[in-house]
Structures are given as structure tokens and as C-alpha cells.
Length: 260
Image (cartoon, rainbow, N blue to C red; front, side):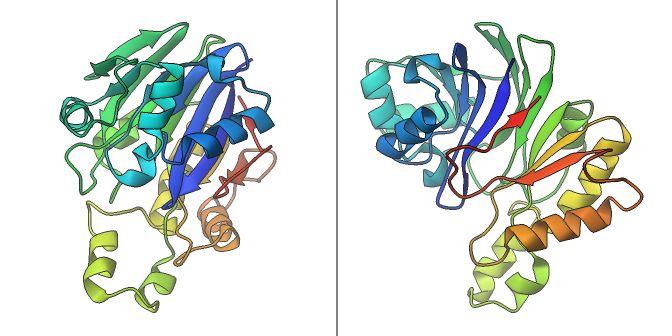
């Protein structure tokens, strides 16, 4: 049975494993190789279970550990064409590993992985929709300024969704960030706030998605309690624990998983 392990999820680093100890895929490698291996081991996942790494975009909190990890474990890496070009030119991939463009769907073992465009201030940015060997569908979608029709279409119908809930608008507006940074975060190519995340998750639950993970929370402009409260309020009329299961992906975890 495939499971979703949100190992790291914040502006300090991101990595999500989907699968089991027998095999699976890793979305992003945004922490050091040492920390990533320790997190996998704490969840009883051997490094040999990672059949491929899929990169969402080239910001450091998504690729920080990529070069060292691929040099030690020779895992194939997939990224959108502009990101793959950057990773190759910047020496972010070990010569022991192969780098592939993804522009649609690819099969890795018994997993089918499909990329879809997300609006973010980078060369290219994407989310991933994954069909697991046991017939379930998972979506990982962070780092987006708005929920576009493309994003919505790919989230719809999934069994489990990890969606960004990056900031609380009041905390951001009244916080210490400089004004240009606040504007960038709130732009339609920045990050998704709790209310927008809740509005989208309401649509998904109403169409059958039952397992929700809030991801990429800001350390300075959000907290798990605020994010979950805002999303739960958006899901009024739906009972938590019955109509849906909700959890927040912590900055770093060594145990919490979501069973599909």
C-alpha cells in the first residue's frame, strides 16, 4: 500500500516521498542529503526505495540536497525542460545519475507521474499528479500564487492532495517583511494563502477527495493552528474526520504519514 510521507515542507526545505519501503518516488530534495536520508530511515524507508526524484522548480529549498544525493545513490531525476537545463548547467546532478525532461506523463516502476504548470516566480514551476500501483491518485502542489484552471483540473479527482497554505494574509501584511517581498508573496506568481487554499480544498472535498495535507507553511507568516482553522472554516458543513481527514505537513517529520 502506497503512503505519502511529507518529510520536509517549508521555505527551509521540501521533500515528499510517495510509495512504500519496496519502492516509490521523491518529490524535491530541498534539504541536505544527510537530513533527507535520516528522515527516510526514521520512516523505515531505505534509500534504495527511491526510484526517481521529480523536481518542481529550481529554488534552493527544492534542490539543496540534489547533487550530493544523486552522487551517492545514482537516482534518475526528472524536471521540466527549463529546470532540467538549469540543473545540468549548474552542476546540480551527479554524473552517476541521468536527467530527463518531463513535459507530460512518465512511468517509473508502477507509478505514473504527470507534471502540470503552476504559477510561480521561477523559470518553470510545476506540481505532480501521481497514480500509484494500488490504483490511487496523489497530487503534490506547492509554490503557486493562484489556483489556475490547469491546477484545479489536475487536483480534481485525487484521493489525497498536498496543497500549499503558505501564509495568513493578516500576519503577512502586519509582519516585518519588507513591502516588496510582501507584494511578491501575495502576487499571482507568489504563494497561496490559507483562504485560497481552503476555497480550493472545499471544491475538491465536494467532489470526493478525502485526505488533505497543508504544505509549505511560512515560519513567519503562518502556523499550523491558523492554517488548519482557516481551512476548516472554509469547509463548513463538512465534518472533519468523517468527510475529510486534514493534517499539516510539519517543517520536518520523522513519523507522520498519510495513508491513501
